[in-house]
Amino acid sequence: MTASDGALAPIAPAPLAGERPEWQRWAVVIAVHAAGIALWEIAVRVFAIQSFILPAPSKVLATLANPNYSWLKNTGVTAAEVFGGYALGLVLGILCALLFITSRRLMLLVFPLLVTLNMIPKVAMGPLVIVWFSYGIGPNILITFSLCFFPILLTTIRGLNETEPELLDLVRALKGSRWQLFRYIQLPGSLPYVFSGMKVATILAVAGAVVGEFIASERGLGYLMIQVQASLDTPAVFMAVLLITGLGVLLYLLVLLLERIFITQDARIQ
Image 1: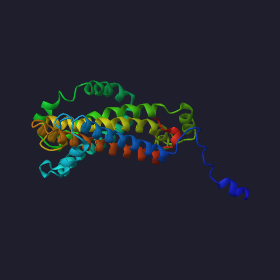
Image 2 (image 1 turned 30 degrees about the horizontal axis):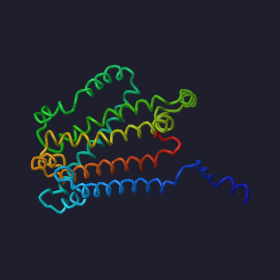
Image 3 (image 1 turned 90 degrees about the horizontal axis):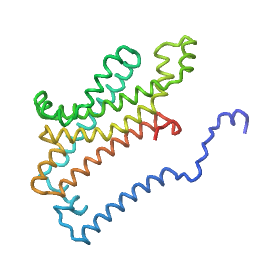
């Protein structure tokens, strides 16, 4: 091997002692979930638990064949609310954080107001949402956005403020522009914090969509849960809960994928 070949050859990081390969970790996660479902099925059958109290997983899955529930349509509505509100909260959260970082006056005047507004219980805003925006996907997207926005805003602001002053002074000394300062120093340094807020917001996005459907909706999985609950159709309630959970897991996995693409493993905030 020549010296140039040695210079170009990448050095693979040594695995930490006792650390499992990633595929094994995922295998363990899947196995634990499968074992939990199996124990659930066995417990229901052994103790003869009534379906309206705790249905077996097999009965829960059987509800998917019932066309009266319109699972595909209702899941699509809830997915639009979850992903739409989350995307809106992500974009506006990052943009507002950039504005607050660049203007101390704006931070002083507007940020405390946002903190106060965030303290308002979103359920308490339900009647006003109905009066202002009526029923539909739009109002539920706004409720989801209101829950996702603030965590992303806070973590992005912290990430942008965590930039080392020495690096900022170096770029300024080299006559770097404001865009170059943000592009090469502040943005890469803030990404771990941004993704940390994005992970928290995934949980809140699902909660926001369901709360919105409980309050002001005529479609969606949350609305369906209210309808079947009145007739003690517990298997359908469980199926709706599982589908909502699946949407949240899908969104969380998407955030993990983006984090893997844009951030090295050592820089990630667990």
